[in-house]
Length: 392
Image (cartoon, rainbow, N blue to C red; front, top):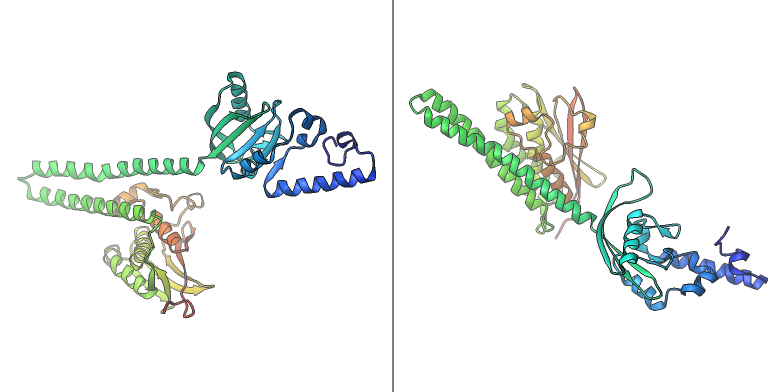
């Protein structure tokens, strides 16, 4: 094969010693490529090296120190060297640039002879199903008619910006509904001042919308706090029994109003490290969700179990269940399985998202089992504290 380390046509091997040297050199270059750099096969060809010369030690050190993806091209557009980041992002394929957008940017640089910068969206791999990368790409000249390409990954930053924009848009939309309703109800009450029954009816609706607004604002505050990196800087030893009892107390009135019986079972005396208030909020949100989607005169159960170093707090309902295609979305912010029912019951669409963040901040997770017609089980999983791990 042309370009192989032991090919007589490329290396002009004439003796057995030359073959050994060529093989050792190939192994050495391969090891260096695995650890730090990909060395183009074309650079190992003697005719190409005589034309442009290998990358100098200074250039190699420079590329190794660059935090971004870096690729060096020769005057013909062949890859002379690419650092690890460039390989990880699949910017190079068979000693050529893997993306036509990069090639077009280099061509524009060669035409204008001035440095070029552009934000590009590139596929993570050759497959059409591969994800995308948002890269800020710069092209600049080097000596010997070479070109340096630097690509900075901005995918995470772009995703964060999109998430923030979506969150602000969703919050704005969600706040408009109760605020608009309260405003309209206030006008109606003013117009019905001479009708005591109408005033009482609309006043009750105002109270309901005000309560929903207060809940929404509080959950937005909770979610914002959970996204801070120091959400759990003051983690303490927490008794799981206290968390479960407090959460049950907070939902007992709502359960009675819906005719739902609350059943507790499982182990006692378990402990975890964390924020007791946040854990109580997580369990309460799971109970709220179960009550909201349970039929009247139904039952909601909560069970606690320790297994494999984890405490599992499971909340089981007898509701309608969640379709398989919707189960991956129920933890998204503002996602509601039943929009109309959520609004009737005061659901904000943030409760399960908050549970997910609380679980993650405590080093755990929240899992879901559900089947239509058979109800759902949400399980909060948190690392357990045993006697050997408890603080003095």
